[in-house]
Image (cartoon, rainbow, N blue to C red):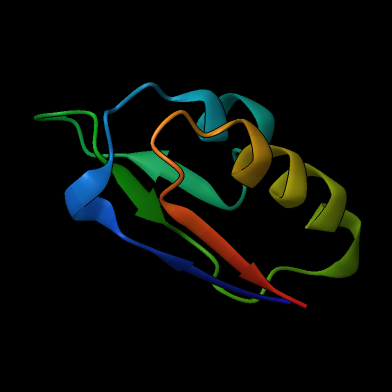
Length: 64
């Protein structure tokens, strides 16, 4: 799994951080998503897929 983001389109909803906190974080100053691990371990894959699916701005891209 490889994850990419388009942080310029992030609306700072924070759903990804709630679902996969070991993979995503938010900048303190504006809440924009920060990618912590672009190639997370297998036990994080389901959470990453869910985070990508519910992201309201669709900024998370997952390549399997």
